[in-house]
Length: 282
Image (cartoon, one colour):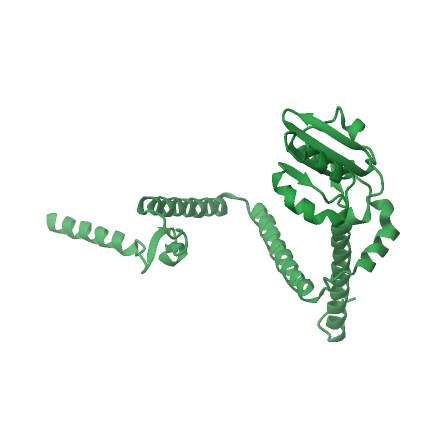
């Protein structure tokens, strides 16, 4: 009887080991029938990572992988067939959307003409400028922030307010002495940038200073700000061409892309009909 019992235990032990999934070569973890292999984590740890951090990164990755596998298995067991079909349909549609989007983007990238001439930009601007209104105040100005004790202060001040491009050599010599400056007054900037660059201007005094043609000398402790406002465009006015030029280019390119996509979709459908690959049955 004891002998028979021993063989029964041995059989059960062997059976348990027999039915237990074996570790597959190069595998490092298993959840059900799913295996995680060394190749799956080959590029996981960045070069130069310490041994302790490497172990932690790998351990966390394995735990996340196992948790996800266990959750998906539990979901597949416990979700209703109706719910699973609903999600399967969504997954199929997502795959279709993902593939077609990637394919169309590749076609567009290799086909669309990205060169937009200045003439085309100006033409589009003139035809649509009512659609391009400013969101805030735009300003063109130049300024200098320098120490009031600068020995050439008066000369710099006079040169600044009577600015002449011919004085380039003069400005190249003295700009290194300025704490901050912007001498190009042909560029439109948003009022928020003015506040950031010129702390002596704020919402309380902006209407007094930010006026077309305004000259201002503002003392701030030992600093002096010399400011010359060239032009101002208020909120909700037509934005100047140069300011929205980058936006115009993006608009034109997007328009080209949409036209190309529409043309491509029509051509691929027409070809399928012509080649009898696409039929609608009555």
